[in-house]
Length: 623
Image 1 (spheres, helix red, strand yellow):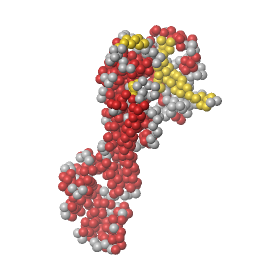
Image 2 (cartoon, one colour; image 1 turned 120 degrees about the vertical axis):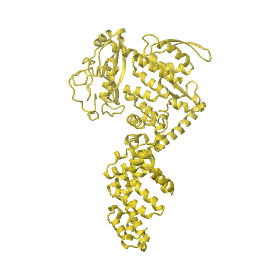
Image 3 (tube, one colour; image 1 turned 45 degrees about the vertical axis):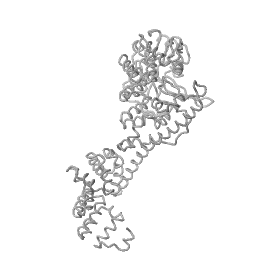
Image 4 (cartoon, one colour; image 1 turned 135 degrees about the vertical axis):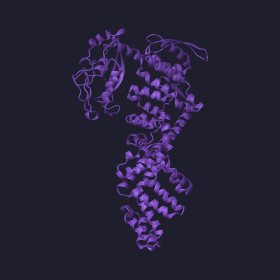
């Protein structure tokens, strides 16, 4: 089963002029054609930026998966442009046909040209370039020109940026024991080799040796990448950030160094600069770290947007998002009631609900620590983890590792579980607040549709009391036109005085009339005509014994809120108290239909109709 791609998962190809990218390869790549191309490259090294996708195949053992090069370019920029083009609208998960394309570097030398796996890889396992729904290389289909050029300059830039770690011999001296060691880097597995040196305490001399190598002409980018990562490991964040900036200024930012430099900037407290660097790269696998940076920057809406994208197809990101210290400012933003309604809508979206499902059993598979996690570890537990410094992370030691201690590992396990649950609870509290705001607005919409604007107003008031900043944008999420006008009032008073709704309501409920009077007195003239202000003036006048002024204020509120039963009820009752029955009857007569749906208002209507403040036995039972 070859190229079983679902066209429903990708957008239709746009109408583009028939053009072929300059990187288009022959319909069939042979050993001879590949060798010919390699020979034309400086040093006989061809650097390709491939765009990989996955396909499926059937065997007697079931369905299998394999990656293949959809196309190859001579610049990473062109490969990323092609990958992004293929990915438009795709929501495929790993292991499904048509898995999202990603740009990767590939080193090709003459010794590779006769290797069947490489030819199969480049030819998509069927001796021809692969045809997908959106991208077709080598078959004459329409595709955009991704701006690639076959040039020695492009190839050299790729070689410097993405060439593998060379076999380098270092003379290292242990800073504590004085042990001298001659170490030759294993170019086939440099990460584990260097991790071992760091684990044995050679981080400082290794950094010094790498610094010397990085300053040599033509030094491959991997040297700088490892050196920046090592400086991050040594918590020399400012040094790592400065070195990263210098690399970018000198020869641009190699993609595999971009994340390392961004982490250095992030840990140095320069999250905004780190965010810009990742944004310029445009790599899909950088979106989660962009969310982390945005959260630290206080750009909560941006952080939530990236988090939704990063967790859409990644279980690791879903679990990690609730445990990551980077998102503490985001959860605190909700906890303190500072979120606006858009942020509530994003956090309560179905896309984020996947993150807050049942807690998966803890099996350690996602148990890595970043530098913030490591800093929170009690000093006694730090020996229980080891550095993976190239990735700027730490992982728990396993049996057989140098320095493994079963007791410490168990204690670390319980510490991580307890801390993880506590962090998850904080994130869940923010999620619950966002969900509550969305639910209450839905109830307000239901009441408004039924004509019950009093209860609808109470619902909106609850949202704004808990989340004052929601007043600024809740109108955009209201469907009913009457709710639009109500939202405008809340927005106006909150713009004048933050937390007006909360403070005024709390003052009235606690009978703190002096504070309520001060709040109302500070209102500018443009707000005095609002129904919310008038009804509070009525409450204040009534508490002071000025019934006439209270009636005037309630009637003014009724003019502002013709669909709200509350001001009509209040005005009618106070008119009845003064024996002004004709006026009370007039107020009841023009009250909205919802007035007669409420039992307390029906009792008021019966009192006015009977022109008697003494309720009947039936009325007494109904109150």
